[in-house]
Image (cartoon, rainbow, N blue to C red; front, top):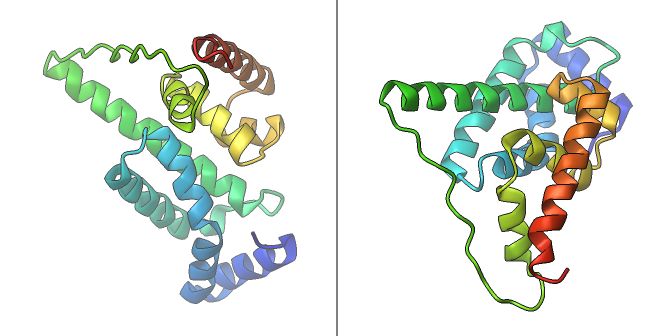
Length: 180
């Protein structure tokens, strides 16, 4: 992760001199975190993560001049990625409805394991709604504050808190069967 001063310097070089190398440094600094976030949102679809990450970085490069000085690049980049994911999800749902395909959520596997495993936790997180999963990912795995999640998702802070509360409750009930 870059310091705030390094980030501002790289952004200034991008804006003032159209410095692609500086933007490349920003991409390198934040690529892993962004891909991890997208991987969580896409339920592990690596090819979709590649597409969404590429679209995110292209949009960020094309609109870096519109970045407001008080906004962290990291937060702004995650906002673009989240919007790309939401747009993709809408396109897929629209195609499915046009084709009259309404797949139901897959039922969760019933297992009698005595303790929770990483796979069980992953499965539980993947069963959350897209919004809940994004908020859980940002809050617990990216260490974003409620205010920062609000900025990324465009939701009011109270709505973020509500989604986080519901997601925690859902995870608790899903993980209860593993005696966690």
